Image 1: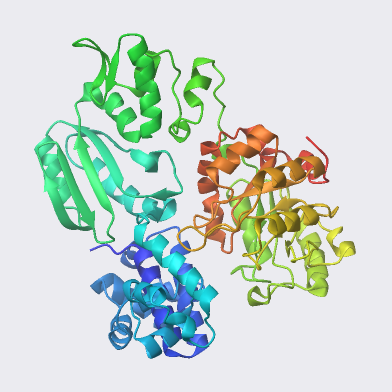
Image 2: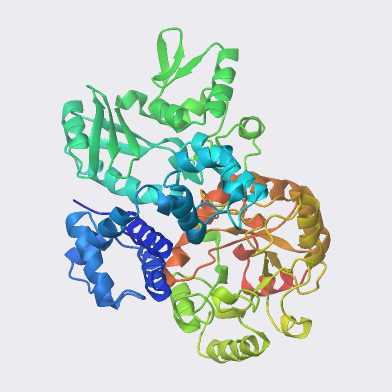
Length: 575
């Protein structure tokens, strides 16, 4: 059995939550959280690393004890310590602790006083008015809890694109290894690179359908075979992810791929074009009456209705069909267009590696530049840099730059936007930097007008370069704060600022619609990883996927520019 990194990280995160509810040693809790972050950020499977004889204790924040626990999970699929702690704290306490208005301490109080141990119990207690009577809660907190529980009870369970990748790519490789398989591709929202995925749809062409069906349901990660027919099967993986496999004829592969990639709205728009010229399009091909005209490739499906090939990321019926008819589809950004990363952290704040380590990792990836943007002093939990420490870091970067050829470390900071719109560092120091990545890390619940004004007031500062993770959302964890994005983007254009597409898979902020809004309004963006480890630099691909969904082309993105041009644009001048 192959255990995925996501599963190991989730066990450590769950253990940390439960230990905190128990009131365990904070250093022990922090160790498990750091281990979860390390495992989740690894570019390779821990199962594979152990099979190859790698020493996991050498990984940052792991050590011998945690390495032993990881090996236990890989070998048994369980963590005995987690089982022990869970047996003493029943129910869904770890999940409840992730609700924004709660946290471990409040969950413990709810469990001790009201016996609440799951979402259902929390909802019932909130609706009956019991929670507001507890010390430190009150009617407003109870109202927020109820709003959150109601939302979670009706929201479809979706996983991030990165988590989906961890399950999708191995099963695709497994299917491709089967005898007689010719084509195999994952369709659906995964292929369109949506930020969250509900399930996986895989299409295959092969010589023997029965052989591939048997091979599919025998995959080691399959927990339940929901159905298995001659050309279609559905399974549930251990993670709870549903995977559908369809075997299609080679002459219909392109039509099926176009159909099952979606989106539904896009497909309806394409079929409407076909109807107007007397054709019919379905998953089997393009037909005039009973005669098949096309279907082997997606390109020929589109061409029969007068369209060029439309990239999967654009297929949302946001105007791509009209653009195709008028030959105005964008030339979408690719990962190779990016020349550097403009938002990474070092161990000076809450990163895991030195500035030099991060720079070398960026250089290995072929980048021309990398911006070190450690947190400013306000973010004490992340060991934010005060003026003295930032000044020292500026000098360190200047020294390091003398050791590099054809590569430059840019001097930056992730500076907090305070509630009044001022920045968390003095102007003289900010002016010594190459760029500032300005961010909100508190007061998320300000009214829409006030939060919008807060950011616009910060943009008035001459040192303001980039608005980081503009809406503050954390996918499946925290809703975006209320903002008037049109006003924000108007202000950015007027002041020569730009907005970030944060490529962290749990952020992907700006979202796809805001990326398109930025393009339409003339706002330039940067795509950055917010990396805290060297391996996080690979998250750029998720930011590129988001940018492509928002129709962004290379000229819309600042970090496609060579360094000299980038420096000019970062000086608050319009492009």
